Amino acid sequence: MRASIIPFTFAMVIMPATMVSVLPIGGLLVRSGSLSSQDFVTVIILSVGVITPIITLMSYSDDIRTMGTIVNEVRSVLDAPEMERPAEGEAPKDCSIRLNDVHFSYKDKEVLHGITMDIPAGSYTALVGPSGSGKSTIARLIASLWDADSGSVTLGGTDIRKIPQEIYSDQIAFVSQDNYLFNMSVRENIRLGKPSASDEEVEKAARESGCHDFIMSLENGYDTMVGSSGGHLSGGERQRISIARAMLKAAPVVILDEATAYTDPENEAVIQRSVSKLTQGKTLIVIAHRLSTITGANKIYVIKDGQVEDSGTHEELLEHHGLYETMWNLHMEVKDNG
Image (tube, rainbow, N blue to C red; front, side, top):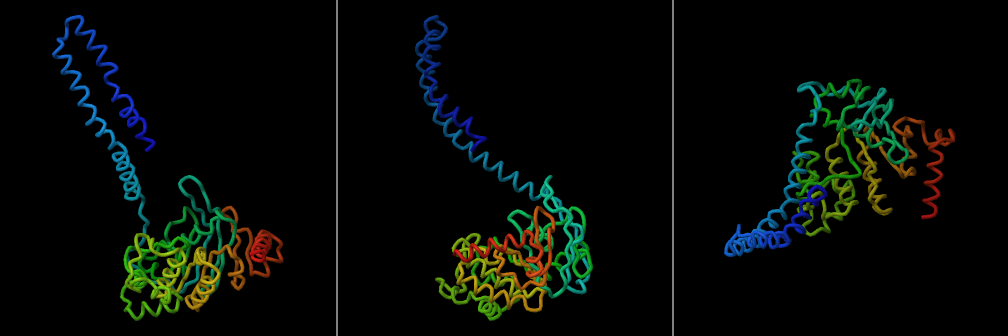
């Protein structure tokens, strides 16, 4: 709209005022004898009639600009560099994860500055810190949604860039705070976690994730269409379906990025119970703002400004009297007031 406002304004304001120029100039030409009065009348009629189609044409200028913007956005995706992964390879020997001096930038702005972490197989690791500190970026790098600019991310001692994408994806179940549902039925959205799953397996995953009851309350139960991007469901309902999808996938590594971000306290308890079932015996990585939900983590990494500021268990971090203690006190104060 900003690009088309000038020509559109010109069309709507200047062009309809053709008589301002046609009448005096035509009158002078008729007076001088260079234009006959009959031709002058014809010119007046034509100048009035040509305005309507020109204005109609100019009314499409914003649509034309919109098409250009969409084409440029599509081209930017198509022209983006592809992630390089081998076509063949073996699954990693275990599900331990290590980030070694990882740097990552969004375009020209570096947001991670030398992140180093050790996440043993079968452990429960939490990432906490202020908004914008880089927690979700770390999760996406571990999930192989992006590649680090420098440093390495390894799974089972193997750099993830040397593991075929299909094999690596089978190892990871990623539940984001902004989960995407396709415009399909609830059943098919859950089945995406395991395309070969039967209807019974889908419903079992839904029961274990605590969303069977609300699904059955929908108009067509499991066959209810969720709408574009899951728009027919609330944020909490979309999240619970995403957890059911991850539960059905049964991957050995589970990443939860604010899995209770859109839920009320009652549904949060349901999700916490389902997450406990989902993550038994798995390598679990949790990003949380509600610190009371991750006090039982084997290790907590405190991220600030794209760096690891501190790490340890809940009790150890409180003894360090650093950023974590400040965040914990604020969290408890808000919780008590609530």
